[in-house]
Amino acid sequence: MFKKNYLTKHLFLTLFWLVLGFAVWIQIKDEFNALQALFHTCLIMVSSIVVSQWLSDRVLPRAIKTRQMKPFVLKAVIFVIILAILIGGIDYYFILSKEGISIQQRTDLIFTHFYQAIPSSLLINGTACGIRFYQEHADIQRVHSQLQQNFLESQVKFLQDQVNPHFMFNVLNHIHILMKKNVEMADYLLLKFSDILRYQLYECNQPLVLLTRELQYLQDFIAIEKMRWGNELDVNCSWAQSSKDLYIAPLMLICFVENAFKHVNRLPNQKGSILLSCVEEEGKLQFNISNSYQEYPHLASTGHSGIGLENVKKRLELQYENNYSLTIHKLDSSFAVQLTIDLNS
Image (tube, rainbow, N blue to C red; front, side, top):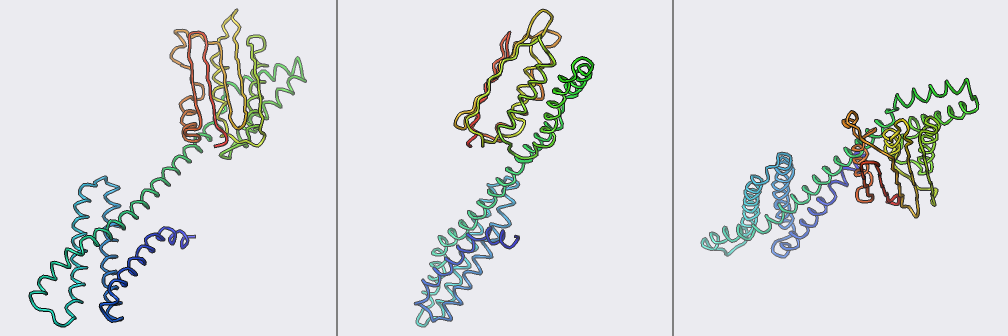
């Protein structure tokens, strides 16, 4: 695995050096014999690799990490000049091996070969740094993606562990009361509650779960809440799903449902209401939920957050990026959420 990753990482750079070496050899093979042309090419390639790789592997990564790119430009110019001097010097040395060159011509050749080597040095160092910069950028993106994935996993784990104790104790207490009055209803409630815990604690370990299972989880949760609050709430739900093999991030919708039941207006002599519509058509999930709501001074500081709308917003942004839309309307007498997700993405 290590060898494969190493070869993949250095593939472009290896191809570049091979092409460059072949190009240098093609240019000089007619001017010198085979041994001299090979030796000449090897010297240029060794000089180019040492200088450019030092610049791209040592200087550039340090500049990227410290965000000091201006000093790097100055250092890069120095490296370009150094490599130009080396290439020019190698060319000059081999030209001297030819006969019939005067002293004046030799002096002129020193500067000529230096100037001619500058574009080559610039191209070599620029290409090496470009490839290295691409690799560094890819590494940064990979680390960023891993951090995003870790964040998503931590959020899901947080939601899995966030078994609302008040909800749990209230359900268990309600089951206890029903056991004395209606054993059949208590048994039904216990099964629903068991399904909720099983799904939330054990079935949400994957990045995605079947939409059908997620919606069943919501329906079980709502069924328990409706049973608990009885005639104090009017709960109207509509569900529609056209595709059975779609997947969704687990526990993405429960926050909105829990918040609706937590903050619905249920004061004495005032019946609260919750409206929920969840429709999936051709991979587009349209989730709307609203509840009657009234903010009172002694409750104003608690807000309408539930498990945490901010966490859900972050998960939506990381999981679905530009493939979702979320609208939240908070009015004097109602609180409404409209969420659309393209599950095909």
